[in-house]
Image (cartoon, rainbow, N blue to C red; front, side, top):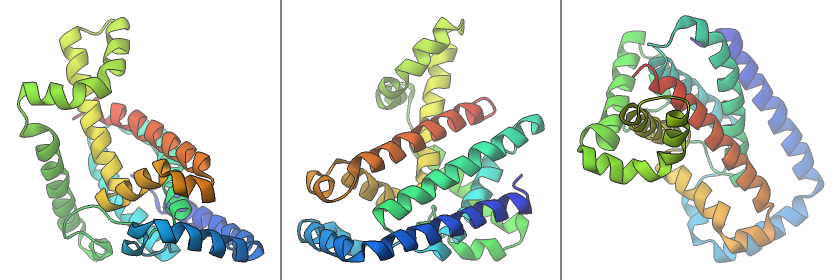
Length: 240
């Protein structure tokens, strides 16, 4: 689905943004180092994460694109051009968050890394499909109806209520709302595997971090990301 030009555009934009960040950091490096020193004294988890680097991000995005190609297989092809624009904005958002919290981008999936890019198309698709299915199995298929409602109803009830107001049957609305919430978990995991997302959540809420860094900006980036994956999850939920 993603054309070579689309991939090149995303990676070019990332390099331009990174260059600007380096330029800005050069102007205030002393202040940043002092801020990080103060933050590091109270942030014991910082040592578990490698710093952000652009090469890792580009490898991650190429693998993430492969995941989305698998998820979009059953979508109407007429929607694909619109999806490409949404995905470009999503990947920019993801890059901004990784850069802001300064951790190395992570690739989702047990045993999956940048080497999958060199696999044959059939082999790569098989690996990714297996990973997606195992995730859905863990988040959805292994749960009975009561467990699904307990886990997902509260987070999806606003969407469910809106769908019912629009005329959808209540049972159908509940199933669609739950499915959307499950897919949001999948999409969030692809962008930010567990360790990375835990770090983002911690820094979004940590009081000491907010005293040193622009926490409101990070929260805004995260909220923007959450909106994007919610909208994408709704699109995917129509065909899975």
